[in-house]
Image 1 (cartoon, rainbow, N blue to C red):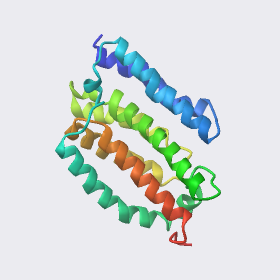
Image 2 (image 1 turned 90 degrees about the vertical axis):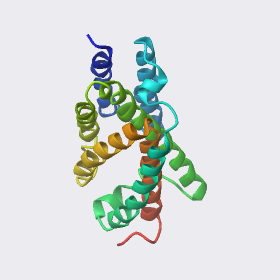
Image 3 (image 1 turned 90 degrees about the horizontal axis):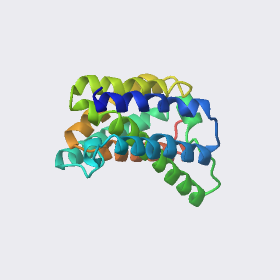
Length: 201
C-alpha cells in the first residue's frame, strides 16, 4: 500500500478523538496536541516521511501573501459574525477574568490551532496531494467539516469552505503555517470582538 494512503487511513480516526474524550479547555488543549500533533508526527516519521513532505516548514512568498490577503478579507466576516447571536454567545470558548487570563486563553487557542492545522492541512493533506491534489483537499476537508458539528450551525458550511481555501493556500505556500496563522489570528480577532463592547447586541 502507498505510504501516503496508509498514513491517511491510520490518522483518520484521530479526527474524532475530541468527541470521545470530553475535557475542560486546557484538557482539550492537551488532547489536541497529543492526538493531532504528537501521535501523527510519530506515525509519519515511522513511515519515513520528512518534515518538509508534511508541510512542516516555512512558507514561500506566495503563501505569506495569501495569508495577508485572506486575513484582511476575514475582518469584515468577523464583524458580521458578531451579529449572529449563536456565534457571539459561543465565543470565546475559554473562561477569563481579565486581560491576562484572556491572553492566556488565546495562547491556548494558538496551540489548538497549531495542532488542527498541522493535522488537517499537514499530515492529512500534503502526502496525498502529491498523488492527487483535489482528492487530497476533499479527503482532509471531510473530517475537518464533520468535527464542527456541535458548534453554531453556521460554522459547518463555513468550515467546509474554509477547509478548501486553507488547503489550497497551504499547498501554494508549500507549508501549513499560512492556514495556522490565518486560523489563529482570525479566531483571536473574533474573540476580541465578541468580548468587547463592539459586539452587536
